[in-house]
Each structure stands twice: as C-alpha cells, then as structure tokens.
Length: 94
Image: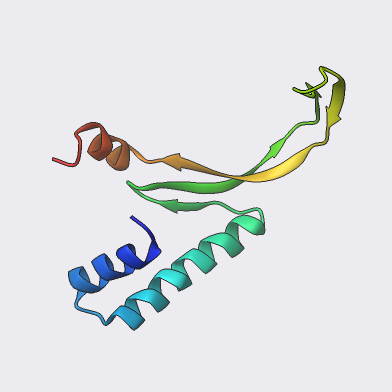
C-alpha cells in the first residue's frame, strides 16, 4: 500500500473526502516527525512507539577493500511495534 492507497482507505473508512484524508495523514506524519526530531517519543497505544536513538561510533570495514574505517555516531529514527499491532500481524489480519 502506498500513500495514495492509504488516503483512499482512510477516506472510505471515515467518510471524509480524499483531500481531507490527505491533509489529516500529512498532519499526523508531520507531527510525528517534528516530535521525534526534537528528541521526544510518540506512543500510539496498541500500534507502536516512534523515537530517536543514538548509534554509537564504531569501527567498520569497507566491503570492497577490507580496509577498517571509523563510522561516526549518529541519531536515527526507530519504530517499535505495539502488542496489538504485533498480534494482528501474527494472526495474518484475520
């Protein structure tokens, strides 16, 4: 499912127009992005948690040359699925 298909699904489930559903989806994505970028968590009970995590600096290896390289520390987004979401996926959407 891509964004357009998700907007269509939201529109048909809520009765909102496609334009309204698109604005709602964009607003949700923007708020999650801003909150996580500010270093805070977004928890949607049953669905999951969005947060930012710091990856420590480490030594890696260039796969082409085998040369050791230093990989700098970085901050990256992380999503952890909630119990209800995990159970639904495990059940195959039944």
